[in-house]
Image 1 (cartoon, rainbow over the protein chains, first blue to last red):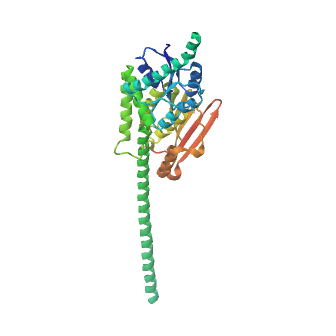
Image 2 (cartoon, rainbow over the protein chains, first blue to last red):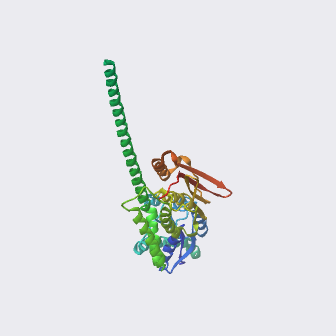
Image 3 (tube, each protein chain N blue to C red):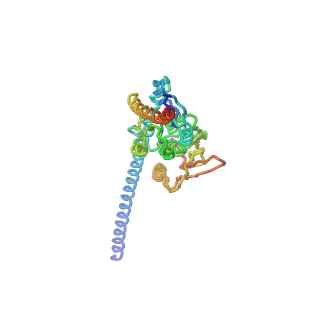
Length: 138
Length: 243
């Protein structure tokens, strides 16, 4: 099974660093893109189709919630919001986010969210590989 | 004789009336002066509250904390320490007991610099701050903590919504008896300024200026656009006076 791919979108460099730092403890994870604004994030998400997305809510051009609304219906990445606000929590979950990290977050809290995301990411990979497996059997 | 005493009597009555009227007027002036002082104190307390609230805004405070923690984790301890110290200085200033209505421009700019330094660590190259302060204005008096909410506005509306670099220019110039302060943001922000949605920051500033300087002050909002750059300039005119 291939590695889970991750995309990080946050307009603050240090905030992206914080996520990358945590991800360094997961060797089987590949960061495919780092984005500094919502528009760039949407383009990269559609192009790379990462399995896990870390999304800041308050970003220039397109905000995190607007990005989610523009994703194709058949694509279900594991989305984790990372933000200093908790005002948007409910809205985030309505948009199918799997978790919501409040800055600053602890290592434990990050791991809890990321484990959840990994599980979803891996189960999606199994789903995708199933039809191919069936084909080869025939 | 009776005519003279009648005249004298009338004069005494007149004198009493004049005294009473003047007394009442004096009392009224005193009351008005008291009310004005009260209102000024209230306004200062409000702007201090507003400043505090801004510092305690989850957006500013938690993002700053997050940045400090990240700096420490990636080993940039010196930067983390400096950011923490600046945050402390800023909070200490805001929590000060005896706050004056006015401070020398130099002092106001020092406070602003703390805030800008913290924001620069967060936004890096996206935020450029320039100062154009005319010579000899360091001791000119300006309302305490008036500039910070205006810069905060510029960051919120111009820097945060912009992909590229935004320059905030803080300028101070003078004529014979007036001091002009200008805060201008210039970048590729997507935010469109709307006069009717001025926001609490600007209206509070307007009210405070009115209370402090009456008709001798003026605040003007000048949205502008040139080529692909746009922004908003806030120009404040107040009487020029020194420490």
